[in-house]
Amino acid sequence: MRRIAWAATTLASVATLAALSTPIAGARIDGAPILTDTATGAEVGSAVVGRSYQIFPGLGYNPGLSAVADFFDNGQCIASAPAATLTVIWVPTTAGTHTLTVQGAPNSVSMTVEVAPASAGSTPVKPPNQPGCGIGGGSSNVLASAGSGALGGVLSYLLRSGSAGS
Image (cartoon, rainbow, N blue to C red; front, side, top):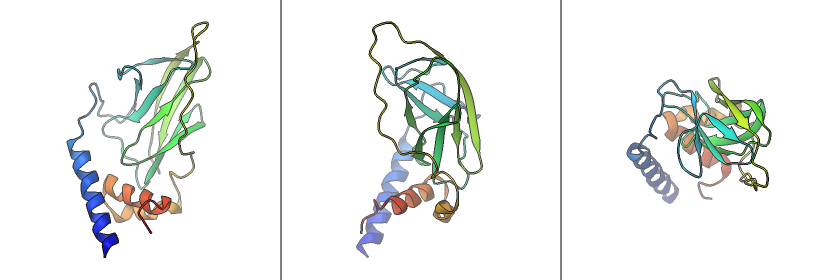
């Protein structure tokens, strides 16, 4: 009984936080990814090698039945994020054109970003430790359909990761 009360309290808290969250200025409704500089919080259209950026899909993105979405840079995994937060940190390591993709099951959105070389003598930011890709689709996400939207995804993510208590 305590677990049910704990889960209900946790879900109510998550729902309240989600309802009170303010969209970031300039957020698009088409679901296309948005890139912000983690140092300034400003939305950017280009990047620099070794700097830290936050990637998240724009308003209107739906991860589908996935409890988790995977984030890719030119097809290489950056990290996964629960459907409730849908954000990861990206530190580009090479200059050039990068296609950033947010992949749920079966929905995905992408954007192209030009990455400039780092300034001579600059110290690159160390990428944070984030969950790897591969958990954004498949049968492990069946629980996501049991709830509605992000709340079902949070519950599924908590249950799979063992964070819901024992």
